[in-house]
Length: 299
Image: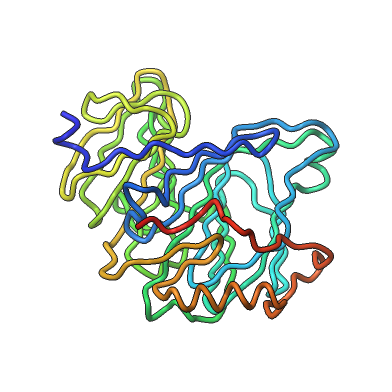
């Protein structure tokens, strides 16, 4: 049955960041991208100690768009455009790096005072070559503005693209589908052939696809054209992602993604030399460029 549904199953690389874990399925040795998705991390779930918090210091990106989506907790986003935005569960932050942007993500003070929660998905989208060097931009879409399909025992929030007859207002640069599917016990939704490349990911709970049990924190890449029923006996949360297949490869090194290795080398030198812009309100520290990054292209 597995061969009938999936082309690949990608198990995560787990990073313990002290207080919480991150499960990374893209990029991986078996596969770099699913549609435009070139990075897929599940953060947490975690409940940190009172007075502590998440502090992702300012760092750069080029030629990609980051997508932040939370299940629990909150995060303050600041970037070199002067943006300040607090994201909470059900909303989406889309940050387009384009020619280059710097941002930070930190727990809000009220979260630190209570003991921060953290649970969610962080993804990056590669940009088509014609959009790689667009001007940087930031977009926050509130949870209330994202369409939700509700069938009683199953709800699906459409984060990007068009699914089940509804379309999210979130900007896309290539054909993209992205949804948060929340299944109650005995809930189900159809998975249609909506894109060139698709994958499903069980974030929490229990679920199966056409009777095949899904393992948590594993990215299942569906065969093109396959349709199936996603079902949960006990309740679960599943992410659906994908979109158009890219005709040209993308390279990944640390926080940089590009169709050009030379462009990534230039970005490395620019960050080392301090040529990226700073983040207003968060310009006292930064993440130095690593000697050996955790996120790299795979041959």
